[in-house]
Amino acid sequence: MTETPAGSSSGRPRLTRLSRSVAGRRVLVTGAGSGIGRATAHLFADEGAMVAVTDVDGDRAEAVVAEIVAVGGAATAWELDVADGAAVDRVVSEATEAMGGLDVLVNNAGIPAGAAIDDPAYAESWGRALDVMLTGMTRTIRAAMEHLRASEAGRIVNVSSTEGVGGSPSSSPYTAAKHGVVGLTRALAVELGESGITVNAVGPGPIETGMTAAIPDEAKRKFARRRVPVRRYAEPEEVAHGILHLALPASSYVTGHLLMVDGGMTVKNN
Ligand code: NAI
Image 1 (spheres, rainbow, N blue to C red):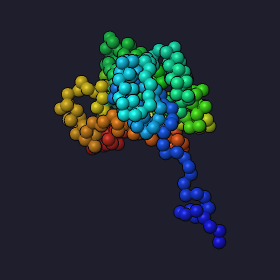
Image 2: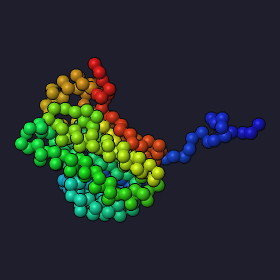
Image 3: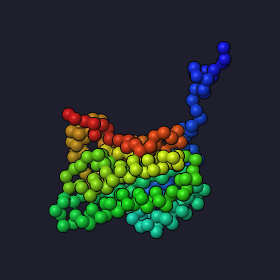
Image 4: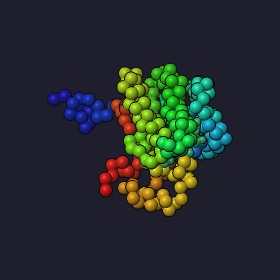
């Protein structure tokens, strides 16, 4: 009788050595000065990654880096407007050089963009929503491609929304952008499958961030009771954990996936 490793009946080792850690990985997050992006930067840094904290508001990016460094993490701050193609090319290149490479790109930057279809401001809202939340992702991805190809486990995680699978009144610019994020994610997952770079998205439900700060607490409670099985808004860190999972080297066979982080909102019927 031949001996097999413990727990194996096939002669294979019980588990492979795929890394379940982001320690030492080089990560760039857009819109990381607040909310979900900030929590993501913190979580990756806590887990030992090097993080390029980018945001259109450079002061916010600096503040997040100061928080991370204060608790022993490694991060650098960059002012970056994802609507500015030249700035995207420059910052992605400089941040990558500063970190010695790039393994993970988190496309998180977003803005509230609502308008009724017959609102005079509709065209402006539509243009801005698509530019920041969809075209912006193609800019950062294109700028990052050569660096991600050089990584041994390149990962792209795009932030969509429950609006990426459904819709709300007066939100069609935002909803179209977030549906577009899902399409972009799926098509690139297929296109890049062979390269080893995975492309996934997260779909947050209602989250306590800058974007939802103006909604009165009572309205939030009412909405959550009615629509969310978990019955509350989430903390941004709960979305960051979904992003971290998709970015792990060990998540190498997950690509083209939309991971809802919505407290069950999109599967609730009654
Ligand atoms: P937030 O307002 O707290 O943070 C967004 C960050 O993006 C801010 O720091 C802002 O300065 C930055 N930003 C805005 N425009 C930018 C640009 N052109 N270039 C670079 N950075 C820019 O909001 P939150 O909620 O953390 O948003 C993060 C992502 O999560 C967005 O894509 C949003 O659409 C998405 N999301 C949020 C939900 C929520 O309930 N808060 C639900 C579903 C999705």
